[in-house]
Amino acid sequence: MIFEMLRISPAGDRHVLARLGDDATVDANFLSLSLAAAIEASGIDGISDLVPSYNSVLVQYDFEMLSFRDLGRELVRLYDALPPISDMVIESRLVRIPVFYGDPWTRECIEDYRAKVAQREYDPDFVARVNNLDSAEAVYARHSGCEQWVVTVSSFPGLPILRALDRKCEVISPKYNPPRTWTPVGSIGVGGTSTSIYTIPSPGGYNLIGRTPAPVWDPHQSLPALKDTAILLKAADRVRFIPIGRDEFDEISASVSEGRYVHEIEPGTFSVRAYHESRSSL
Image 1 (cartoon, rainbow, N blue to C red):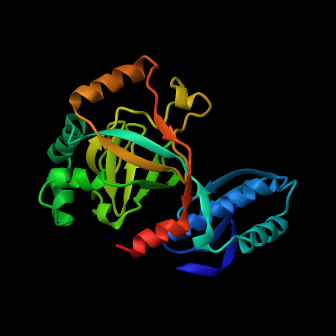
Image 2 (image 1 turned 30 degrees about the horizontal axis):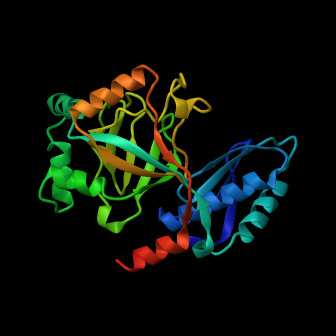
């Protein structure tokens, strides 16, 4: 549910949380991203960072320059001035990410979990079953069949949380219980209604369906798309996953190691009205 009014609360002595809803709909995310853009454009002195998420914006500020009360008042003013959701046009890049679905590295991770933690189906087969699909290949086709919306970047460095923009491509699955103790870098995981790309060899609970050789986080900033930032994706980007095989995976991995890999990125905008119309026609 989207609230009738923006809800402001302190989050420590240097942060304010602006909440505009209590669910994880994409419409709520459109609002949070538009509010974050309005805050950034306002140039309010004392604000040092913004973290938009599903239905909120975390605002970091200098309390010696800006009081909690004054900041809250400004956030409400900016929120009340936003256009209706359907009229929003959001800056949105299209980023193509190559994926080796059903790869051997995530299979090894799953097998290690099955041997040391708990027995479970092979993740792609499990995801196929809970989505009433005939095979893992059908999961891969559905997952790569439409653009995915970057809701936020969170949890681990550069790790994006994505949602399918087309109902026909939604993949839903329960998460691991208990979670894994490690996950290969570049793994593509699905959990709940979301997709993530693992950026470090971290614990995790999303079901693993593939792996990308193209980094979305690079602390060394060695690739052209990452010269100015260590994080490739940002909220409001759209991602299209492109299926590849082992040979192409190895070729891309080599070009990444040599600093030659060029990410496929197209600038653009996203019309919420067009999105709503496409959803209603399904």
